[in-house]
Image 1: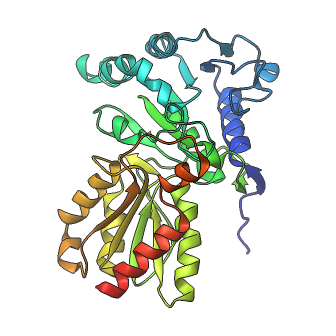
Image 2: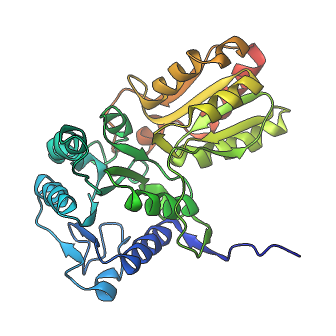
Length: 334
């Protein structure tokens, strides 16, 4: 008997997020959206689309321009039994709400001895590549992974954008979902079913024998393109996408690096104190250390604010050519 495969369609990343929101709202009346312009306007990047017409203004709530107030309202609603999904127009603006995120949402479950939960999701588009300059283009994942009590996910594909968001909404405590702006128009197969992913489970995007490339967000697709070009040079690079930054699937990373003996860690964010430093430490503190044939290498954004000029913006973060060069040098030198 032939197994029936899950029904899939091709959706954009933005459409996949919207479908996850719609399915979660249809399944649970406690789920509601709030944020600036998420209603009639459909969201700063059009992600919420027509949800206000489908579910009404009570469940798709436009808010004043006050990130601190928006997240504070979501924390209160979550404590009262609702499941709010906050959209912050740009991840940079979470700076205005960090007290509510880091000192309230993240800590209440612990400080009350488990007597309360905060089932809140905060969605925030980030990253460079749209000419939005220094205050609207940052990659801030390291801020959130450093806060105990928060889970952090970075979907790299439309399918993950849906399944990881569904998992985040189902989680009993706060989850930060970081969506790269350049990915919203990318298309890919997305299952129709409302099936959540497992938080804390990495995805092997490509297998390889010569080195392991670990990448997040938009860097995953760039690393896959780089791996294709490396294969033309006779270098087989594996690409591993953590998907969930916290909790981190250290085991999958260690297994891959143990097999290849080399690790190239790629992030868009600046190098200093970036998330890939944590991945490097995890490898160095594991059994994979004894299998390394080369130093653990990080390829990261420059330690500069993101420039406005397009050519400088590109130069500030890793591009496919940079990944190919670093990976080839890592293999050939060691």
